[in-house]
Image 1 (cartoon, rainbow, N blue to C red):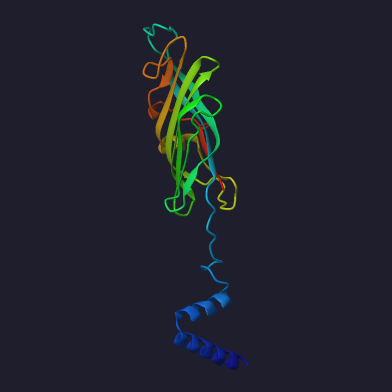
Image 2 (image 1 turned 30 degrees about the vertical axis):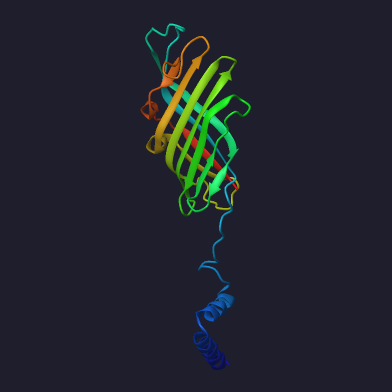
Length: 220
């Protein structure tokens, strides 16, 4: 019986070879279930929205003498810079795997906003994410500018089916993946973007701390 099945298999393959590769592929797919080895692959759906939150301990510089702003800056250590950008809808390019969004003029007096994210080919990590925003009229007086750029942020939980899929880095590793960090604040009592009341100078102001964290949520 086994010999008969073996001969039938050879006959089928011979016919397929004479008929072309397409028929052979169909026969193999019908036997193996199709797709790539290991059960095939599923193309992920388009990204619809992305959110980011971060909390970083920093060295913060401040002035407390508006409107003159002539006094010396006071440096405060172990202050924190952080914010949560709720998921923003935008556009996605599946070829480049780049998602972009902005939320200018939305409720909250936002301007100069942008969020851009690129995933790697397997979507196991974020190649880079850039976020920037200005928010005015906070507490009816303050304006804050925040900007961050980070690279190579791994999928925290390792599941491609999660929605949202969460990418996260924490602890002292944050220093290695942050390329740019901006924070500035001023009020109607004094100050401006170029001469703020409180600020950090650069990503070098990040203080190594186990509580530092950056979390990215990608929705489909």
